[in-house]
Amino acid sequence: MQQSVPDETLAVGERPADDGSSIHVIESVPIEITDIDGEIVEADGRVRGTVAMSRALVNAQQGLSLNEKRLMMTALRSIDSKKSPYQHGKADGYVTVRVRADEFAAVAALAPRSGDKQAAAAYQGLKEACASLMERKLNYMDGKKRVQLRWVWKATYHDGEGWAEICFSPDLTPHIFLLKSRFVSYQLEFARGLQSIYSWRLLELLMRERDRGMLAITVDDLRATLEIPETYRFADIKRRVIDMAVNELNEKADLVIQWEAIKRGRAVYSLRFTFVENPQGKLDI
Image (cartoon, rainbow, N blue to C red; front, side, top):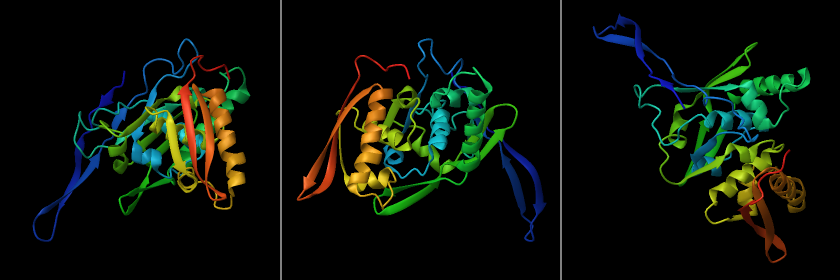
């Protein structure tokens, strides 16, 4: 169960202005959301939690590395996307979420603490992702406007304690809270152990069309959304992005995916992915 602490606006000082009025200096205390109660891994070994975000975020150029993606999506699993972030406090509060090293390790499919190497990998990955996350921006189109947002307002890693604390950018809250329509959700288990950011981003595009079981997308749109280098020709995209991502999702996610290229003339113009949830479930990874 998620818990939250009301934010409070504290007057920490005031001084007279030249015109005789007062200028108030305020400090906002974040709304703090704790992690989901209990272990991140279910008794059957599956990762607990669901990620939800607006379609704009799914379609955006997210600019995240694989470890940054693991950190952000693990944080999102602690959020109830149907509720307001400010229902327990004033509207100028920020939303802060903690992510533990064991949660990060579960999403990355690192082995439990069977040795120092596995434990160190989880701590180091979480620490590095937290350090670089402040610089990450996402880009998306709102009509004719190109919007740029930062993912987080603040990120803190606690050395020796094995957890990171991230404070979401206020401009991001409409994309992760009060989601009633035109949003995308998926079980974090689907992304467990993915080793490519391309695989994770393709997964989100597929989940956008989950009701239809089919994704049709132009090569140009796929290139932009997955942030594929401009130097990649289609042969490179096929081998280094699509085939690799589809194979990994077929192996590690609860999905069975097939795809085909559609040409205009001699050039590949668009792609068609069809997918169903695997009735046999995911194999051990």
